Length: 291
Ligand SMILES: Cc1cc2nc3c(=O)[nH]c(=O)nc-3n(C[C@H](O)[C@H](O)[C@H](O)COP(=O)(O)O)c2cc1C
Image (tube, rainbow, N blue to C red):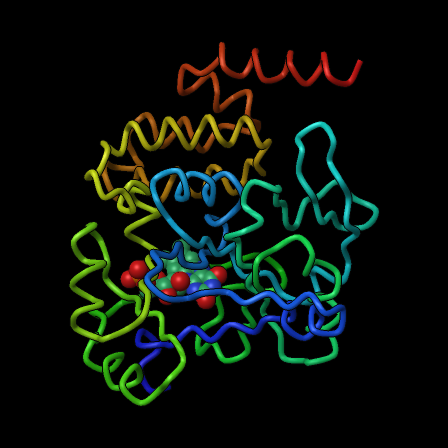
């Protein structure tokens, strides 16, 4: 597509194919949905649950490349109540999900090979609502060595999305420059798209999904930190997401930004944000349940 911002998100549903074989067909309804967009390093479990708490109907995970998933084993994490895909021989969680989000989470896979894509889909299709195959991304959001996020530099061109939505009979998801709750209606109206997806607007303030209006970003940040503690989020992802929020609303050079850089664990984050009690409660509860 000429304009990378005006993209129709076409999801592939291995569910359909696999489920047909087991005569258990599942359809995903992509109409009238407010959707959390895929975002590298940001869209891990705590952030997806945060967005859902504020009203997101469908939540995409960050793009993960097929090669990375193929190195993983699936593990039930009884301590957290999650399903983890962990890189073999390490404790690195590449993808973590939980039953609470099963009906709305979309796993985005970066791939250029149908066999690898199918193998990965078979590994996790029972754990997610749908799998989004990203084969045609004009920019690289995920690089094999380390994840690198690219971001839009020009205003979104909603009129181009309108042309796509007009030409297709399948539901088209519009995205680009949705920063306020009212923008969901505006972009739908302007494009005729079936649903709306939001990336940066949600990253900067996940309560953009709330029909009741935005909460303060400080409040949203606190909720996020608690969820990172509760779901034992990868500290690199937590720090990256907090950094994005702070840079947008404040200044990363301020003491808060510098203190975030120094955090090397969820315990550090809890201390920084005055959530020691919460951290203590969560860790004690885990200790009790493993006895
Ligand atoms: C931090 C960040 C990470 C992103 N990661 C991905 C990704 O993993 N996969 C993808 O398809 N798009 C990714 N995108 C693109 C967004 O999903 C979205 O299409 C784009 O940001 C435009 O929407 P917006 O105006 O709401 O930000 C990313 C964007 C940002 C800002």
